[in-house]
Every structure is written in C-alpha cells, then in structure tokens.
Image 1: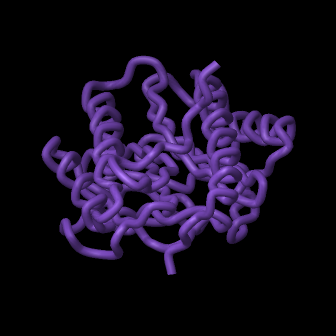
Image 2: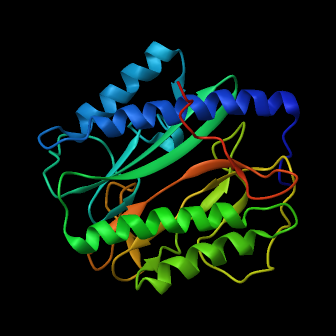
Length: 252
C-alpha cells in the first residue's frame, strides 16, 4: 500500500527534506580536487550531528557510510573511503536524513572543475530528466508516466537509463511503495494521489544501461565503464499541477 501523508506528517517530512537538501548543498560545495570521499562523508556526518539529525543510510542493510559517494563510472552506492577526487571527475553524492521520524532523500552529480563535453552533457540531461519526471508526477497520472518522461528525455539525448535500480516512495521508511522505474509506458502502474511522497531519481549512463555490483556488495558500476550521473529529489504529489519539490534549500 502506498502511504498517503497527513498534514502533520508532511510538516515533519518538510523538516527532514529541507535539512537533507541543506547538508547536500553544503557537501557538494566541499567537492574539490584532492579531497577524499571519506573526508566528504565525515563532513556530512559532522553537519548532521550539529543539526541534531541522523543519516538515513548509515547502517541501512549494513551500509558503512553516512552518505553514498560514487565516482565517474559508478552509478550508486559508492562507499566513502580513501579515494582521492581529481579534477575532471564526476562525483555523485546521495544523502538521506532522518528528522522528526521522517526521511528526506536527495542526490546530485557534481562536476569537479572542467569536465569533458560528454560528461557535461550527461549531467545536463540528467537534470532535465529529473525535471521531466517531477513534471509528470501529478495527481491522476500513473507511476509509468514518471518513468516514461525520464526515459524519453534521456534516450532522446543518446544516453541510457539504468533499469536495475529505481526511485521509490519515501517517508517513515527510506524505501516505501511504490517503486518508480526510470523507464516504462505511460498510463501504467499505480495511480498517483495527493499526499504521496516520492523519491524520483534518474540514474543515466553515457553508454549501456547495464550495470554490475562490485564485490563489496554495494557499489554499482556501469558494465562498459562509461560514466554515469545521478539526480534525485523527494517530492510531494499535490492536488493540481506538478509535484512540489520538498528537498529544496530554504531561501534566506
């Protein structure tokens, strides 16, 4: 069953999502040549402690990091550690926060300095695919409309969408119903209703959509070792119009 959030639950969701977006933005600003993925992860962990919140990822299924940090041909679930980030890298950062019993989940791919043209275009298309998916997340539409929108934008640009991993509902749990593939047919799947909170997260590859999980049982890489980009927002399906983005940094 897909949870429909109450007004009170949405108030807590907004807190979790706002703080998740804040820490992600601060973390992204720390991505510079020479820093390690472990140092980035510790920065995020420290900010969470200072804000009085917890990572939604740390210990989830045994995951050892507070965030997921994936480089270049890594799609998702990269484990932070000693790897050094270099100029020209793509760094995908996925971060979830637990606050007031609810979870905000978001991700971004950061270009480290100047990147090659294909990598830059991959990121721009990833952002556009996320925007298209959010635009399709309207009351009365179906889950398949979201995936179709993401797939159409991605494949029109000559890239591919990952099929082994997908978006999902999010709320009291990190992964709730429904699953939200980044491909599919319009008009298929569960109908979207106001009060649903969804993590829409295109994962798109420069080459093949096929991926493989590394021996650490977490990190996912593209099978052809070409680059990947990952973007994610937690959104709220509203009465009319496109979904409201909850993982936004509050204006000052």
